[in-house]
Length: 423
Length: 207
Image (cartoon, rainbow over all chains, first blue to last red; front, side, top):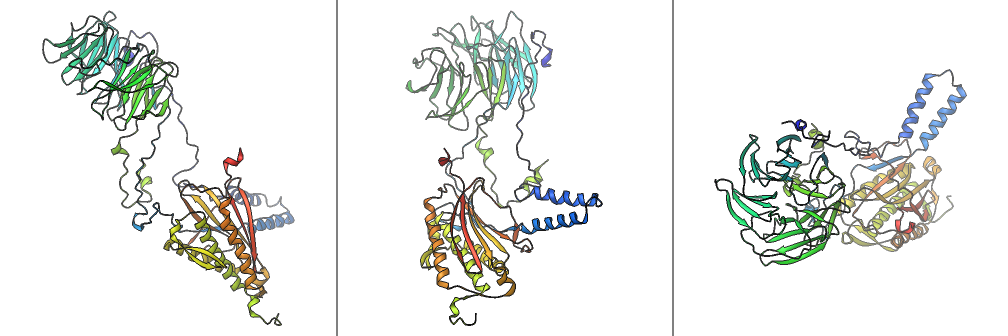
């Protein structure tokens, strides 16, 4: 169960351990009691405090003349300081609109969405030792129950995002391994594990039990898996895509042939509808658009470096953008019309694009090797990325969903509402 | 002094204080209009100082300036007002963008002994008119205020002044490394008012 218990770990590092990240300190020296020090004259205050004490401490040392001089000096100094006064009631700010309506002065209806600030650094970094640096595998998946599965070498680890705890699901034998793909079933409880020996194992993570072994679907390693309810589609290095009904004994229900290389199905294709052949290199990154049913985004490998958009009804290529780098994976933002791509050489960055303008919103760097896999948290805010540099990083790139950011209507704002809420 | 026949040229402390506070009221209105702190349509034109001046019709701004003037007159009559500063700040960040500085020198003898001085109204009006014209033309050199702004007024008083109930002590709201332009001054022979505007250095000019 314990993550450190695996005996086949060559390195001394524990997988999925937090890497030290220095926290930024806010530069302001303010607190909730004194939120603004602008009106304080510390030099003067210091003078008044220390001068008075000095006089008391050694009254003998100061001669009467000196004392008188000091008194006079302080008085003059004091007298010359003018009082700076201002009305307690401040004049009102000008109304926002050109046609001032007294009722709507405080209601600011902003048609333009405020720009979301995207943190440029990863929120959390975990160690991922022995991750396979292989473009054709799918080793990372985030379940609907908020558990992240990652395959490191022969072992599948589960990292619970709500408690940040790690557990080991399974370590396969050397002759069967390494693990080449993982995929959560939509229920968030069952997980499919594809192996180098062409087998696919189904696991129940609640009881930590292997439920089924799917054999005979492929002749070589299973590099990709995807679910559609009870149908598990598997893609192998043999160029086959197999649909497996996990409920029945003869699980193979369909087979598709036609690929020359490994080809990830990502989703259930019942029929070869279109042959989309504009990419000039291996295509591994694929993502269906969550807000437009027939839109597919695809990213090409090192020789192609393009993100292309397809209308899958007509097979037309809608747009193509040269990213300048290998596209390893693609993710659509569930909350905004944005697309996140992860890249390899030279910057190993994550790039956030506005769709459909394809304007770069942000570039997130931090990984030191190509960012092979990405997975999105169930609420759509956080993205986990695993790279060849053996780290797993979490990015708050997609922002909080609309419902969470919408501020509660301020009916009667309490002045100390914030204070009360502290613990 | 009694030999003077024209009563018009005699100016008392009370009268001088009224002129200065009235001047400040019009100057503040003019600045708020010309610097676009409030929308144009909230102002109306009136004749004053031989110029057409603009006065705000916004009730809250109006009452703010009226209340302010009442207090300023009181301090002017006691000779305890050293300076009035109108500060224009960014609404969003509260950064101080402009400071309109009216420093006041009071003839202490008048305050202490209750004597009066001589200066014709006309002459004072002419001096004030010159300042008003300068305020209006200041838009030509002041940097544009490109964001919504708010204003505040600071009164520098003698230290022995009791803080009125509706007032609080404030920081000077200074601008770091400002540009300064001195404007004309006027003198009632009792109060001498020097006007100066300081504003945030325009970054474009620095390069």
